[in-house]
Length: 393
Image (cartoon, rainbow, N blue to C red; front, side, top):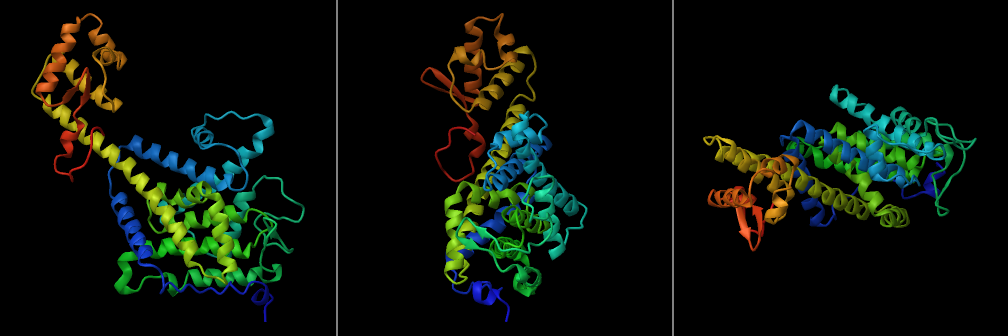
């Protein structure tokens, strides 16, 4: 009998979800539906790049922040864009960030090439080596090598016995690669649901086993990231779980603790993780919708002016587009200075010209007057959506 069966009896490599609350299945279905729609949603190339960078920064910052890195999300984004300057005393934080970015880019490179790495002990070791690359670690820690000593996590949880770690990781990979996480023929269309559950369970079990001397949490979160990317999730949303764990850090540790103390009841942790993933997914969908609304609105404005030429109509088109970009109602004086282009257009004009332009745009149903302010009528393109209180895009 192996030692872990006495010290860690909750490590059973079983996931009984038969008693899951219906809400979990509803959330999982919504996650898959949203991800499928997002994977087919067209984005401007510059918008796609920005969203990828923003959500990569969120995930990378979250993955390292949980372990104590104090760089902000904005600083990580600056670093991704090559704009961050740090003093020598905090250079190690940049290295921690670089290690996670390198691992994420390597994973995505494999996925793009159609060669996603299989989940294996060697791959888990490789990711841990990425995590600890060029970082100062204890003498008994070897990056990418399983520990040979006992570890205590947070002065409370003791990792699985070191002598059992190779066996436990082998069992974990066999389980995660087995039939429990593969949809049957009749459930094949729900592959993303199975992948999301597989990613969360992989994270939880790696946290329980704690196979490395350092970097276990970061390695577990990279495994989650890799599983989701390999399963075809849109790249920005593959960082949502890490971001959720960081934003709810105290609850994250509480759920990990409850999962082991309950004797291996993993459903509460799964529900907690799926709810956070879905919340982040809804926020991401809103960002994508915002771009779609903007594209449709701008196309609508250009269509209204398609057969109109001359300086006045060009000025009015610029006015309504600049006004819609602000998302708020503006006074006449504010409108004339919304952008350098508008300021130049009205510099040699009287206030009567601006008044005529505004009245013309009101007549074209492109702007609306509210008291002494004006706003773009962006709700015009939402005519056939459900009735709701929408003033701006």
